[in-house]
Image (cartoon, rainbow, N blue to C red; front, side, top):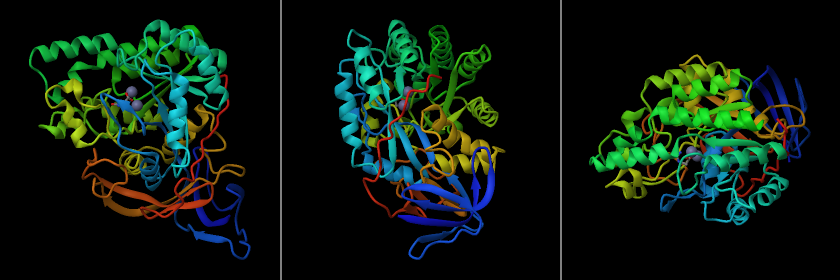
Length: 459
Ligand code: URP
Ligand code: ZN
Ligand code: ZN
């Protein structure tokens, strides 16, 4: 397979240049001007268009048994949604419950993706308890190429770990040289506040946010940072949504703790009034941490522009309307999650780069390069360079559109960003040199995606 992309405006996180990109055997082998294509090679003219390294979503749920049901996507639907939106690799969370066997779960999650994903993928392995077997099991999973763990401080008795288990997971991660990603909310406070609100007859989705207020997230973030500090491990706060949590993370960063911060698409663009909409409309916008007061959005955009928020993921987690209605009598039963894997790149480009003053270099860094570096994928992924995988997004800056559930590829009957305008979308998306998407349509090879094996990094 040979492909020449002519006259691209190559936008990397650390450089910008106009050049041709020559791809052989899935890899970029030359970048230069006036490159010749041998007869028979496929050629794409990218004149006047930006070419980005394939975008990476570091926080995705495809297969997720959660809250008495399952997230709706398969790797077929989720990966096509990702690719149409410009995401060429994602990191899915393997999330066994506390009662499940971690090795069996890992094999189960791997089996669901193998041969099904149209884009490349890897996993964060969740440690949802720590017992006599955990060290051996997690070590085996790291040896198989999974160089990151996940812990939940929230979701008591299901995914959640206690402080002792958090300590043990971080100490093991330090020993193995892998990074620990963490959902940071105080589980006990969430449970108590939920019970108290329900007891007062406050059952609708508008009470989800008050049951997990900003202080609950700030406490979880500060505690995780303190544990990272005292184990010498490397930590990554997922889906940070509010100012107190960012203050806690920044304080830790400033005292030298190896801590990185992810925020996710919904928190940049949606606020808590979406979850206050009547009936199922509000339920569609229930996720955790919850959609916040609007003032947090400016804080997140500013922090992103300055690199205090390192990465932008989605926390893609599609539950359809009938599943959301499981919580019609109590907000605590609404499956938590909003899909977004298809919308992330265009929305962050539109409201960040085009209308928010976000630098194009930081955009590429936050949506691709920094995740590749943190999670052991760089320079194979996350940059347009000789030797890197030919995962490319050639950008159609002239595109204008509106997001709708009817047009989306994720297997969900609603779109959390319904009606929002986008300016720009991928014109061409390649995965290791193969064109998978043109102008919003998947035209590629299903099942092309590979499991990306990653080495420990000893941060
Ligand atoms: O609401 C969310 N975020 N659902 C998915 C599970 C998680 O906490 O990431
Ligand atoms: Zn979470
Ligand atoms: Zn998540």
